[in-house]
Image (tube, rainbow, N blue to C red; front, side, top):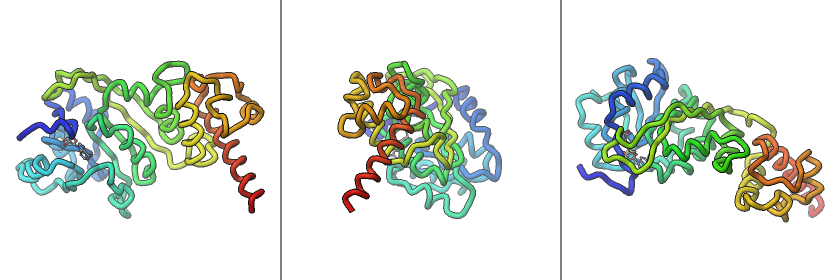
Length: 267
Ligand code: SAM
């Protein structure tokens, strides 16, 4: 079967790594699992040794057909041939237990997919994903480093993120050019700090990190005045990259109040 580069296909073949991932996931019968991009089934069949059944979303029709035919699936794999970026995780969960999401993700969709999963976190218990090492570093970055940015703050608002371990290119066929890391996300129904609302946080964080070398006063021009930044206990002359995620929450809250006040004035 051809390897389709556009779908980011690098198939895991290292049994030691597959075993470590399954160990970290610690699957229990009775839990509901949804795998994104099962490919040739490296993780799928390892999980089906422990789980009675598994659901998966695979975009590549040929790979999906191969999985459906595989005797190891024994009718226990519910496959959706679809783009995970369009998936309705809330609908897939239905009235049942929340989903445990797993996937060795194609690198080209990792950020939009993470945002989609976080948006629909009410349906999700936890997420274990293999991603490009550099993406996991951005996901777990703390203020002060060059990896710290929009992804770090937006994920920190809704989930705890752990970098579990790194995986070298030799674990995959064909080998990618970069290292990978396995991450765990534990989403929280309520934001982990005050944020105003999601749109407010996204607006402020996106503006701040679009100009990360500018001072906050300049990066947030048109959104918040220096005095408003100051009223959050934040120095308007500081750079976005030194703020704690919760401080972005304070700025978002301030921006939301300003928007609400403006809309009352125009009513
Ligand atoms: N899980 C397998 C493994 O570990 O060997 C395959 C991993 S490979 C890096 C990524 C898989 O995701 C491929 O099977 C690819 O076809 C699939 N994929 C790529 N884009 C996708 C999308 N948007 N939605 C669902 N699956 C996708």
